[in-house]
Image (tube, each protein chain N blue to C red):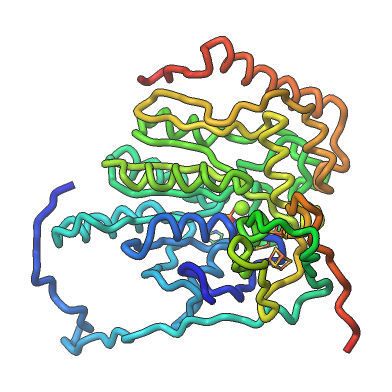
Length: 101
Length: 290
Ligand SMILES: Cc1ncc(C[n+]2csc(CCOP(=O)(O)OP(=O)(O)O)c2C)c(N)n1
Ligand code: SF4
Ligand code: SF4
Ligand code: SF4
Ligand SMILES: [Mg+2]
């Protein structure tokens, strides 16, 4: 692959010479996927030994502090998949049905 | 409390292991990374129009051309004298083993310095679970309603046949191994390819909690071999102490509910043959091309 250093690449332009407007910033979007949840993970702190395994495997990465203090789960996004409960070696996470309201 | 480069609320299915794999890959590569994602479930990560959940430069390629897009971006970076940027292609099995195979083959043949990660959920999931070249024998998909009649392609061997300097397999059950491989691949002065097993609750028909457990079972039954091949020299990174029968893996997934006994036997025979070949060679093989 030829590497020709070119510090002054042309700006993108339309065929008539007008510059193409490149948006300065994209909006970073996040959906409140917690609304999907049918069951919520509840940690039993008497069983939890702060091993961090639930945090490692949560597909959404919404568990924090599982090694430093206690596992905190961001329920704004948690989809209730149950991966954390399934992987916890201490069986310290219960999946509890969300109430109707 | 946001962690990493991806927003937390994405519309991937609950329990999607592709999402965990993507997060691990992005976190390992860091902010000096340009990402190319073709249509497929991972297109959710690229976003639409001016909205994206990913805080890295990302372009959605077309399904045939992930590797060509990545190669073009690399050429552009080289033309500008920028050598400290990773160029990542992150594509599904349909976009890799079938539709994008020609552009991947071309990029690897040319020696373009791109990192290509194939997340393999073993079908075209985003368009409704159609069978792909990576769908395993006996698996139900909407285009193989009686179970797939043929074996899957071996992507790792296809890459090895190109003389690629770095090719590896990985699994979301072994995230440290995956992260180590991503870092090694990124440091490779040529093309690199990582093939990641990607259990999919929606397409494989299993409960959303079971993705990591199923990924681990694939390794423990010997169905998914975790290896690395550096300049043609193969090393198996995870060797199950006692291989479980393949049925332990198959029975966890609804897509194998209708599998016949002969197909199970054929799969077990394939796995046994692979592992006896590995054992006979001292588990470190020299590839044919090396
Ligand atoms: C050339 C072409 N053919 C078909 C499509 C339609 N299409 C979009 S996504 C997709 C499935 C891709 O499957 P895969 O790469 O395995 O990714 P997954 O959806 O499984 O994550 C298909 C067929 C397309 N975008 N381009
Ligand atoms: S996996 Fe279980 S024991 Fe380990 S930190 Fe999480 S809840 Fe606690
Ligand atoms: S239920 Fe799923 S999304 Fe929610 S914290 Fe556990 S692993 Fe994460
Ligand atoms: S279909 Fe499978 S791979 Fe696609 S988002 Fe859903 S779980 Fe993930
Ligand atoms: Mg797929």
